[in-house]
Length: 110
Image (cartoon, rainbow, N blue to C red; front, side, top):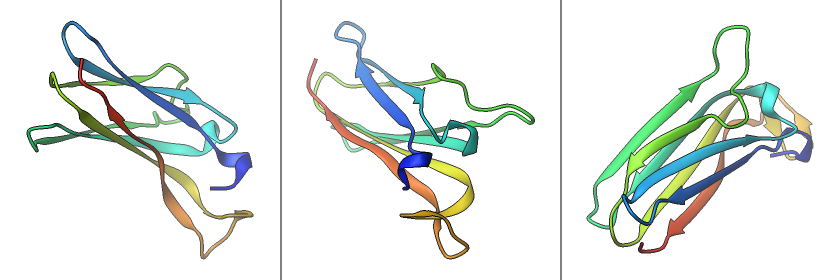
């Protein structure tokens, strides 16, 4: 993903209720994000996927979140964004990608 289109996402697990919160932190490419999809793979092998879609005439906002049930052990969080145009490493390109993995982390046991 070109630097001018980068966005930031973070995930945290609550140590008491084990809820996983995935937060969209914005970035230079925020205006170009059509949707953000997060997938949680729990330590027991179950998976769950949720998506935030850009509202008509607006953007996905900094601070928008998705929430998942986590486990007491390690859980994996992966996040992809779908952009409004195809991009190559140097910028917009008809042969480029539209979906980018922007986050992949193992959340430790809590």
